[in-house]
Length: 332
Length: 282
Ligand SMILES: Nc1ncnc2c1ncn2[C@@H]1O[C@H](COP(=O)(O)OP(=O)(O)OP(=O)(O)O)[C@@H](O)[C@H]1O
Ligand SMILES: [Mg+2]
Image (cartoon, rainbow over all chains, first blue to last red; front, side, top):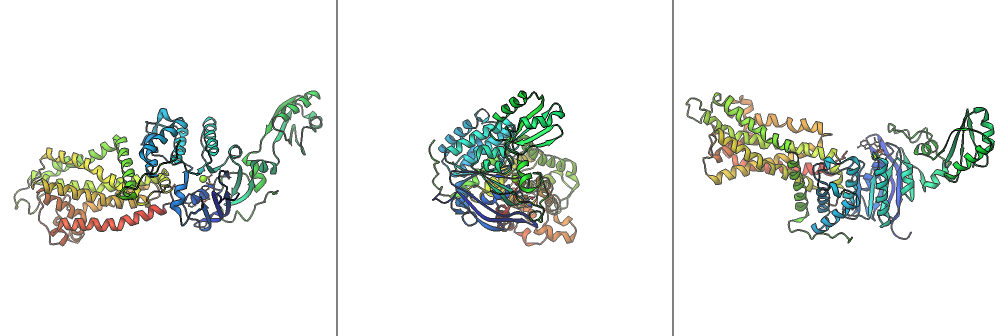
């Protein structure tokens, strides 16, 4: 791409006392792209976003957003971005419409424009019916939608979304994904953080996996899944005596080495959900009754297990942890 | 829909514009919690009634009545400016708690990520907290009037007294704002916002004459701007002032109050803005 990337960060380091929250993060988001920053609790996702949104100064490293230096041209950066933090930050006592008006006024937009844009956003986020109620009376999902709407009031070209769907029910999550896809279609550049591989999968062109303040993998979500072995088929046979027979019957369905354990077979597969049908047919043809059959998609846990050798769970940020006890996943 | 349309820069500049936007938000906010507004009005009213009817006759005002027997009405007239002064001083706590809440809820982060003028959030907060005192002072004045307090030195002076009280409210709001941005959470803000106000208001002439304090405290009380504020309003309302020890602030109470306010704002506004710019949020 010839133009300047929307976001470019090089060697970001951030220390809080003796906690090294970021330990040299490089990140590039091209204009019009969606990049997901994927990582467990404490990985440093919020810290990256806060530095890029000019809320925090990096201890080391440089970053530009929309071509402006976050350190020296903070106000120009702020004019180009919209930020939705990890926790909904809207005024509880104002109504939804009053919140949008306040943020619009603070972006120095004309009252007429703010009025029109607010109405449009409220409509788009299905909040019109509650627009004139204090936000205190909103559900978590409604607040999150208003939060996102607030960061869109000035139509920023770059959007930072910190865990936009954490804590939402599946329906609200799908709704938000639709909204985000629409924004991207309109040309908005998005950097979002998430703990869900599926979310990254759905929305992002590029996924950056971080852990302990370091980028440990980087690629499209397909590449990441392939890197950890893709989907796995898991079959539990009704009679464990038939386990070897079952393994033989399924050999054409599996795309790799099968692991057998008591009455359970687990093996990598490719081809999505059609393999389920193939597997059931193959077992049926051999007359092997099945207790359970499932296609398991890789989860963030799997990615983490494979990339870091530890589970994606909350950990105490240990300044020594990034160096010791970490196994780098085989990169392609 | 069309591209965003930017406003023309108003003649008073963006900082004032943004400050007014935030002030409007804070004022709307206080009317959305009628309970909080109600109690913020009830508290000083209870004070008036308590002092007027419980302690009323018990506290003599040296110099007020030329040695005559304590007169309940004289004390009420002496007392009201004290309660005005105490009430506006305690307005600082609202700024502390309000900003700590905004910080905890992530609103400060959101404001800081907007292309707005950094002092504007604090300007709006302090302005709204001072303006809210207009309502409080109105309710207090009516209560005072009912218990026998009178304005007896003309309306222009009375207006000057009210303006002085509002200036002081605005000043302490900046101190409160600085504290609010310095504490780690709202629970701490609730105590930290109040704790310094008790010694400050009680070590003054708000409720008892300075001469009634132990001598080593008299100098502190004399230079306490609450004393000069209360004394100035007593003079401007034409209420009894009691005998004044020979300290410069008490000989020039209006001037000393205005100077104190200017100096305090000049110290605490930059401190608060610096805290705001660097606040870690969350
Ligand atoms: N203000 C702070 N003071 C001290 N340590 C901090 C501060 N902010 C973050 N940290 C530490 O930095 C590390 C990274 O935190 P960060 O909030 O960026 O993680 P995250 O990936 O966003 O996690 P989560 O998924 O829980 O939101 C953590 O170890 C955290 O404890
Ligand atoms: Mg986070």
